[in-house]
Image 1 (tube, protein in one colour):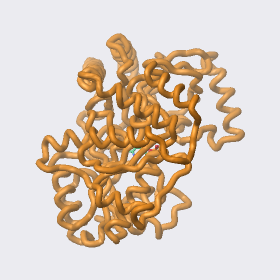
Image 2: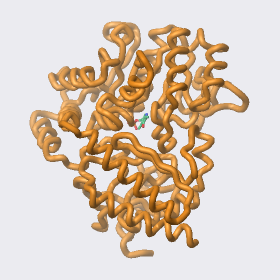
Image 3: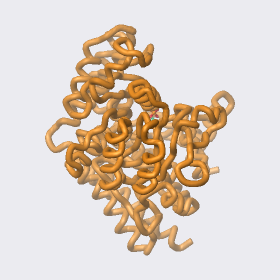
Image 4: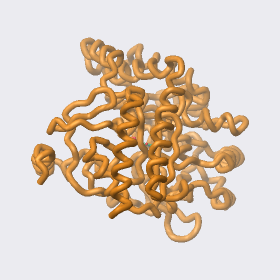
Amino acid sequence: MKPSTDRNETLFEQARRVIPGGVNSPVRAFKAVGGTPRFIRRAHGAYLWDENGDRFIDYIGSWGPMILGHNHPAVVEAVLEAVREGFSFGAPTERETLLAEQIVRLMPAIEMLRLVSSGTEAGMSAIRLARGATGRNKIVKFEGCYHGHADALLVKAGSGLATFGHPTSAGVPPEVTRDTLVLAYNDVAQLEAAFAEHGSQVAGLIIELIAGNMNFVRATTAFMRRCRELCSQHGALLILDEVMTGFRVALGGAQSLYAREIAGFAPDLTVLGKVIGGGMPLAAFGGRRAVMEQLAPLGPVYQAGTLSGNPVATACGLATLRQLQQPRFFETLANRTRALVDGLAAAAREQSLPFSADSEGGMFGFFLLPELPRNYAAVMKSDATRFNRLFHGLLERGIYIAPALYEAGFVSAAHSAQDIEATIAAARAVFAELRNK
Ligand SMILES: *Cc1c(COP(=O)(O)O)cnc(C)c1O
């Protein structure tokens, strides 16, 4: 055993006795890549330190929220101030309105929103609202998109075209996923066929515009145009899951990018999380006023939460969103992220490795594939063994990327040009090893 993993090993063993798999969210266990997860003791800026005191340049950023880097002083200050005033009241606070106003101002498609505590909760509530508001049951989702772990969304495509989904988890009764139609991402013909057959029963279509849960796959403009048109024609709600992309790829989310390409493009509902909490448990769903007013206490769709709009979380979210509105914030972040992706691609090319990469704002993805994949089936053609060697090679060199090939990466405002250069240099060394083995 390498001495540098000693304490991680010990802690992992200890954790596994009382926590299933030793982790509170499965991907943290390193099951896909093997080896021992690093137990993180602290973080600052672009860096994480594990329990051995080893430092890593962090490209996970808590899976997206840490867009300013860790412990941004203005955010820390806002959180400490909020903590001193009390952790939770279970009663309305001014900050909830301030945060809602900020989001409504930055995302024009959102007229009203409700705060919740996790992206899963937000996605689940948006689905219930879509069903309640339309009086219909069926939901359209796409293979490879992740919308949290609500029962109705833990589905994969059945065999054959346009069949209703099968549960991807034990414990989800087939009746619960029977109304979820799972389609291939970016497949216009299949989408049209599905709406032709089921359109009048579809409550909503939920999608990631940039699917960060199959690493990084963009919905094509033509595909999104059809999604919007078909939803409108059939009276279904278009639900954009921007839990990952919201305030991460652009100030107005990925929808602001598509709205530039597609005239009149706007969702009926948007699901947010991750960045809006700045690392605290906070998420939201919002959209058209008439739809949002169907929620209790105004309307018949029930939805609630003891810790919803938590005062410490809203302080963290507000302080985070304030920083994102500094002049040129996203331009600088996008340039840095682009420099990373271009540098990695050049290093891979030197070794003649198949490699493709893409980025938007502070989000990126790369594949050990010659061309960017357009859907889940193409992503799954990636060479997992090679990815795992890349992952461990980088980790040994102090670069922390997601321990699975179907996860996106994140650059924060705290990543310096030197951090990016150091990362490319490490990748160059690992690529050379990959090629020689
Ligand atoms: C992370 C994520 C979720 C789930 O959010 P949690 O806070 O982990 O429950 C939902 N949708 C997308 C697109 C995500 O990236």
